[in-house]
Length: 371
Ligand code: PMV
Image (cartoon, rainbow, N blue to C red; front, top):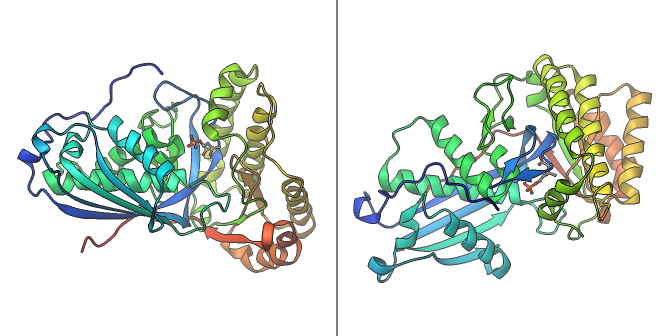
């Protein structure tokens, strides 16, 4: 990985300068679902193309950090962490969080002077096949920025705070940077929006049509097992994919079309681009070397059934996919009754244990009471 300096480095943030030296911060942050997908990265978690997502409501992570001065802090180096996931020690997650926090020491040097007790839990079952890195990394990033604010104050605006949290979340998991904003967010430099950046996501709530802000996203759990190829490996394989340059151009073109549709509430175009992006993401996996496929037969059966239902009932209901076999079924609130009846009768049989998560576009992260 190319050595790149971090933005927001601040050697002055030491406990000797802090307003308090112990305390607690708690955040709830949701997952998000990309419409134009981020697939392919370079450098330190920088995207090869801009992406846009809807923020979810129900699929979320709660993160709680309790901190106090570290024993022998004067000579302390590294991070002193105790990490619990859903009430129990979880070593693989602890290692990931430990590495993440160590990489952030230039931004939050005070972390090396503290004993950190971090606990985290998801609102959705672990191993349900729902990517939790967006919700967990955004919750952790928000909690860390909030610690800084508690200890040293914050001179910027609330938006500046969220932009910094988005920057930090991106370093943990690219897609996580889009979770810190309500309704919808865009990540990646895009000429159409001068505020956009590869370093963090920006909010889009104000620009998009209200119909989209009240969409449902029912996540059909086709397979709840772990993925055979991680997203990290998948991004990496894009570097050798012969279709990659054309894909990055296509993502920009599709973003332009989708953006207009999202502003005007043009559901047909919204659905067309959203479904095309889902299939493109998986086509890129199938055209990587070695090729791989995360789709399952029931994924395809659901995509086909939704397409037929849409055509026969004239209802705007569309599918998208993450890097896995589970299907996100998107539809406006006014269509809830017929679509949910269709899901229960026709699509539930394709789901493992007939399970799905009834989610919707959400209002973004929440800072919880610190008591
Ligand atoms: O955030 P990562 O590194 O896990 O990548 C996830 C990429 C997709 O979820 C497949 C697409 C996206 O834009 O969220």
